[in-house]
Image: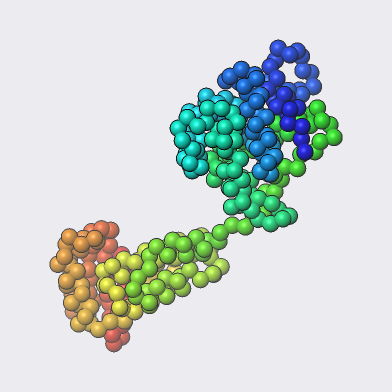
Amino acid sequence: MIKILSLCAALLAPESTGLDPHGRSLHLKLYEDFNTSYSACIATNKQARKYGIDPFVATALMYKETRFSPKLAKKSKLFRKIRKIYGCEEGSDRFIKSSCSAFMIFAPHLATMLEKNYIDRQVGSNYRKALRGFLGKRTKKHAKTIENMAKRYADVYSRTHTSFVWNSPFRNPESIYPKETYVTKRKQRRSKFRTDDPHLNQLMDNLDCVQPYDYRNRQMQQKMEYDIQLLYRVLGPGYRIEAKSRNFDDPEYFLHINPRDLREILYMAASITSSRHKPHTFQEYGDGRLVLMLNAPRRTLVFAPHSENLYVITIK
């Protein structure tokens, strides 16, 4: 457990206190007077201790966002959003120790983010991800700056308290934390595109099965998924489609359908030029091929007879 008064003094002590050859103070630039900033720093660390948050991370975060200034904290867009989450009314954050003050309310909010990113007893929480969640839309770069500041603060504190060793919450590389697999992410996106056609749903799910995909395979998978959705929108539900890929350029789709039904569907599709994909031309050839041309996206769908009630679809 660190000595809060000592940490805040080491960070905020003004340069006028004399020479510091051992670098035991950072002399951080303050927006307000020393006493106000010092009180904000103490309140920050007391809250961090109460909620089990690393004090150096909490201190770095609050200095980065507020300079330990109640005035800057009040203007902060980030803390305006956080105050709304906790039902704080306008003007209820006037004092440092007010329950709606940024120096008090940051702790339960960051603790919530840490709980969401808890891994296990041995590893603890993913502090990097929790910081990014706390900061909202801002980038990894901003969270990384706070991580680096926390390391500096711990280093300065250890120069005065030489027996102190910081147990950094950033000691674990990002790679040890469990990540969502590619397939999991795809399935989450897939859940947004569910249809009334169980065969189509099964086909889309099969494309998400775990396989030793490399980058080119993933590209092909994405292309095939897009093409299947396109065919579904043109043909409508109720038709069996099989997807196959013999190379990385031209996947083939096999459609089980009666020739008369297919001709009628494509003819009707071409006549509705205001539909989503803006079909504009339907052609029928002597060898049985049926062709539908689209404008949005600019594609040509070629339906070539393969066997009885079975067509091979090529999308160009």
